[in-house]
Image (cartoon, rainbow, N blue to C red; front, side, top):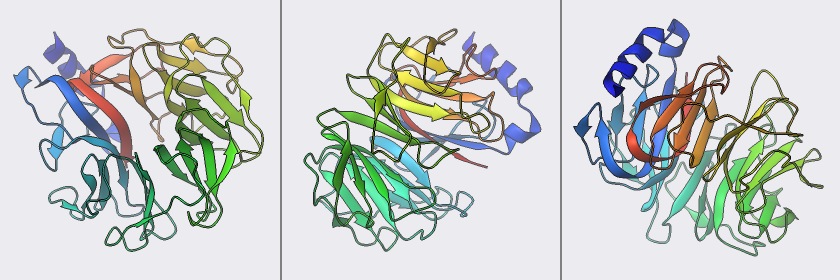
Amino acid sequence: MQSQQLKETSHTVNDKAKRTTLYAVTRSTEKFRIFGRDNPTVGLFTTHDWGASWQHSGWHYTKCFSAAIEPKSKGKVIYLACGNGIQKSQDFGENWTITSGWEMTECLKVAVDAVNVQNIYAATAYGIFKSNSGGKIWQEKNQGLASTFTASVVIDRSRPHIIYAATEAGVYRSTDSAEFWQLLGLQGKGVRTILQSVHDENTLFAGTEDDGVFLSRDAGKHWKSINQGLENLTIYALAQDPQNDRILYTGTFRGGVYKSTDGGVSWQSRNNGLTRLDIHALLVDPDDSDVIYCGTLGGGVFISEDAGEKWRFIGLETSQVWDFAIQE
């Protein structure tokens, strides 16, 4: 049944989608199978055809949490945040090296400065680390943080000296490229993900462990809860339609995907076709906002071609998908 479904998927892929490479980062698996064959490999997978086929890159048994593609490298330079540190490939994923030392483990998120690609930030279970040499040398950057457990780090899109960090103690911000951190808001709340609006750099969304989604329209000075309609308040993923700032998606623990069409004022469940409701990754295709990718914990990757109305499984069965990246 699944192989037939994947065959049908390949017939629906349009030319634009074929030019898009989706990177799926897997942490672990229950019983890894690709097209019905046992395969214990985890780590980084790519697809160029909406999951009709998948290719693995890098070490076969590395626990991975996120990926970042160096801007303007066209997929040549890739960073992976892994349990054993930050890995880097400079040849489209063919070969990999660990760029970090023993002090950097449980790396949960990696981000590359689009203006100066030598500046790399890593969010880890032990705080923020920064490299200004493309990963050759790393320095701990925790001054001002009340909690060093940081689930995510976000570089401001147009002001790269401004960095946001999602921590166990709230949202923190640095205005000097991570030299010093100040509490921005949501004090005491376990923040799992931060999304900077693709339409307005001063609009931020934060997903939390127990308190749902929060919105700030003034770069984090003030926050308000936007949970109407959400029945599950553990949030691991947030995404926004690049064509419509009113359309948002959130991925919850055990509650599946929710969609908002009014900028987060209200949410509606969108789980038709999902076989696993633990969601850790969401991504809206930048070229076609009707196409949404969904990564589950234990259920692999799903796709929606109608803006979340229904979902279809496209591969990496039983894998824990922690993150997506995309390369056009």
